[in-house]
Length: 150
Image 1 (tube, rainbow, N blue to C red):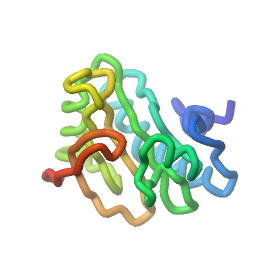
Image 2 (tube, helix red, strand yellow):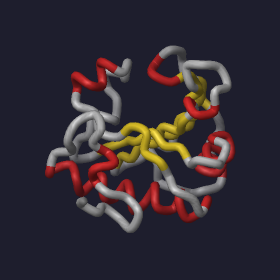
Image 3 (spheres, rainbow, N blue to C red):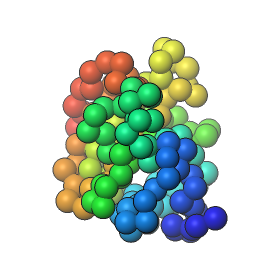
Image 4 (tube, one colour):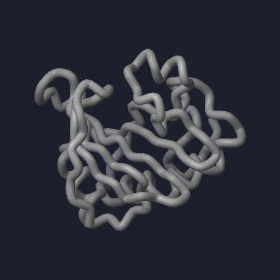
């Protein structure tokens, strides 16, 4: 296993395709600056449900053509869940009081209405973050609505 930070390994992000060596530095920053602080705040395992996606895999799961799940040297993203913690609580902490340097955070509701295990938080990292928060359906099945940050 290749450790990116204390609690996150490279392999957790490779379900949708291998992460190129050139993209590991930005992913390491993402883990250290975004994911580790979230894990510390909630004191529980943070599960990566989707990380890097090659273009073909991204299309097959209904990802946006410009998805930050298709990693670059400057950006990356993950869909996360914290088992035992409501996604709303995590999303609200991230967008309202965490101070984390995220690019986008999206509360995504699963395909089946109110099935908690399908809900996730999409969070992305860009070396020059925009600090955008949105809410909507997973896999591009509906539009996203902006919500307040900070």
